[in-house]
Length: 339
Image (cartoon, rainbow, N blue to C red):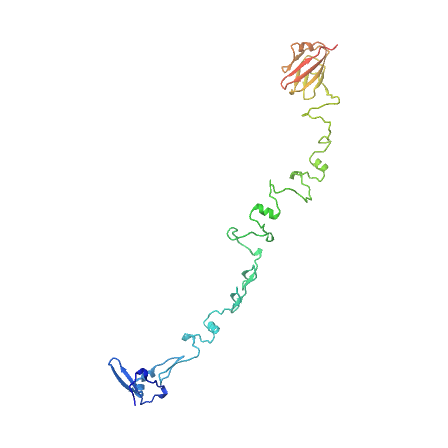
């Protein structure tokens, strides 16, 4: 016997428990009424469900209207991959399989497939052999083009790599053990020279003192006087311990060249003027005048004497004349005639 229960309290039957004479309650919401329908009638009313079609992987049971989704692979044409693994699915979709295993690995295409190019050694660069990429060093002969040393290079190039390990000219010379060219204070000594510096280079071109003097034109006894403590000098007070003698030059024309000597002897053959040439300030000397013929002697404008000098020495006889030059005139005095 049926009893009144809430729908939510009713027991739900399975499909196997349903029979054709079982009755299902149908609530007509719009009409506000409750009706019934048998299972057989409901099946006939839902006969249109049997016309529903589907394609793999979806299937519809035409008798019951149940929908079944196949658990097989879904092809690419249906929005799947047609594969059962991630790697196979990636390959089927044209994706890239990750061949890398280690930090720094690079993916590179081989002859037909993608592969792993391991990280190169320290200080190598990625380069090409024309077919495949590879890691390697760059030879100096392979460097072409220009490098901007201001913006593209940092640090200093060490000596071991052909640099100076410095950032200034002075520091570079110090690093290289070199000296500045031209006048400089870098060179404080020179050791280890095996070749003599030539005279043109500021040296002597010799390895001995004697050869050095020869190369410099300072041969003792030929070019220069040998050292002698007794040699007199012109700029110091001298004390002579032996007699000093001057050369006597014979000049009979009464014109005396003071560049020749200090002392003269003159025997005039006729009348003439007492004259001096190359007058040099401070020069003094003597003239032995032998005027045996009593020739008339006058004074040149630069020859100065007392008013009677010319008259005195014009008388036949022998005279001793002394002179002093101030650079312009020559002043002359005479002795009396010698008996």
